[in-house]
Image (spheres, rainbow, N blue to C red):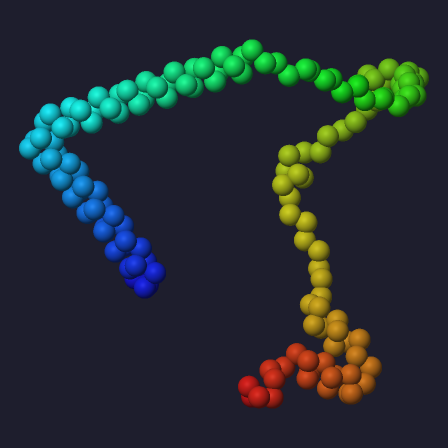
Length: 145
């Protein structure tokens, strides 16, 4: 576990413990002073009702006012040339003869004989100098030998 993960773990555990302690503290206060708790609940209900009514008033005001609708003009479409109809066939389709390949031909592996690329490169070298350059390129570096 890295330090950052550990730090996140500690912060999470601390937050969870704080929430549990706060709930227990509030529960204890509620049991000790039920009248005070009821007064707080009533104040919260009144506050919520006043907020709900103010939101309803705002919604009514919004319903009264309407924005004018402005429509954009339609886009201009360039003049397109009409497509020419396809030419009719001089022969009926039944007169064409076509043979389909066998299934075995479709899955057959065609093998062709190829020479190794390295062999062709070596055969195309004209001098020993070219061979030495190619050997220096392809071999291990001198530091690893």
